[in-house]
Amino acid sequence: MIGFIVFGLVVGAIARLLVPGRQHLGLFVTLLLGVAGSVVGGVVANLLGTGDIFELNFIGAAVAIATAVVLIAVGEQGGRARRRIGS
Image (cartoon, rainbow, N blue to C red; front, side, top):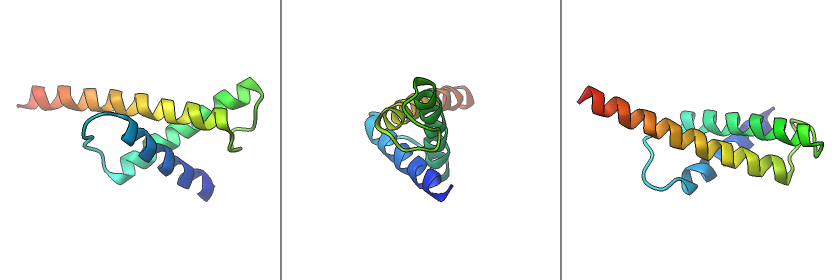
């Protein structure tokens, strides 16, 4: 389980590097988005028959990073909309 959390943090950090611009996300949010991406990646890898949900493999890692990138981008767009409304 600790490995899953560490991998989630790595996935979140890589995803933040891939999203252009500066994100206003803390370490905990980065961890949560990375773990969410890791869960989705594990489920997709499991459905494709390439591994278990908690097993580290290339397809699961690629899907995890892509999912985290999408989550960060969506979260940033939502944050921008809230900042515009609040201004």
